[in-house]
Length: 84
Image (cartoon, rainbow, N blue to C red; front, side, top):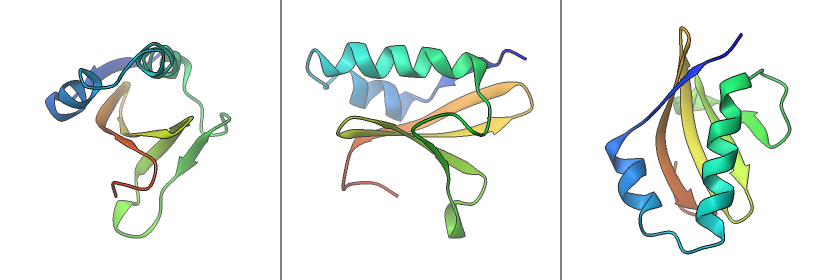
């Protein structure tokens, strides 16, 4: 199953501030979510108040997303240690 990817405005604004080469890596990892499965490397299902969301680890950055039907919505991108 292939998913459709949507990126929220908040995530786009942050991505525009990320320097190279990180931006290319983050974008390629987001593009790789098209073939998302729950047991992919560097992806963790969150718990507690963030239950239903997932975290994708990309080096020193994190991508917060959720899966709704056949769509992956990237909610936020932030540096490690910030967010949630």
